[in-house]
Image (cartoon, rainbow, N blue to C red):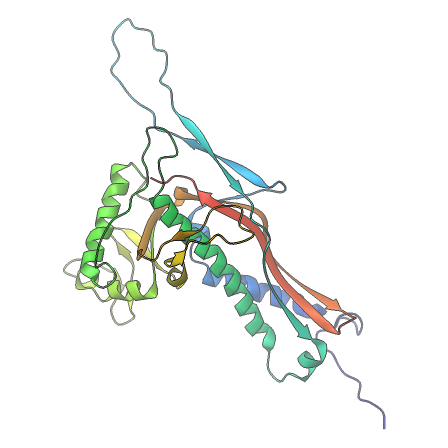
Length: 307
């Protein structure tokens, strides 16, 4: 009795890798999962470089003004400058092996599950780094001499008292205003626990206090003081004791953030240098009769403007 001829649905023209035609679909699924799970990458400054190990971000201070005395020569006022160098971290990688025989025998689509898990794993790492940088920035001194430093609002029961947290968020908004931070492109990022506490607060949802600011039935809240509120599950791991440095990180992300419940920042607060955007590849290994699937990116981030 002869063996059956297998029709490999992922093979192109009946030869080569049995998963060749799956690449584009799988890549798209990983990238979609990454973009869906990532909550902060598009909310700060990102610069893409074609080569190199770091990038310079110039920081420009504020101009001054004074009254002119008739007859005096106008010589110009000095505007202070500084720079921040952001290094590219080691390659951030998520990978998996899929045996050819297992994929042939499998009765459900494992690729979509793997794609989602890989995308979410990459997104969580990037998100966590950025959220920890937001906490680091709040504790940082001024980048430019004479400029403003970061601000930490102390609120003993912010994690259990939404009314108290809202008052603290308004205090944070006030601090940003006082430091001349633009009112646009501000964000508040909180964990699901804090988010739903805010969504259950009358002042944010009651029409007597606000209009179209969320839905109690749907458990949504749009903003506090005009600043959008972003729900991120990564906050659970970011707002923890991450004081140990991680191998491969060429920028400082480690901090004990276990006492923090929310971060508020402007788009210019954090910068990212991107050497290699997210790419997904599948490589068939004839020696092992399996496919190596990798998702990887080369990025690095740091605090630009702590104020």
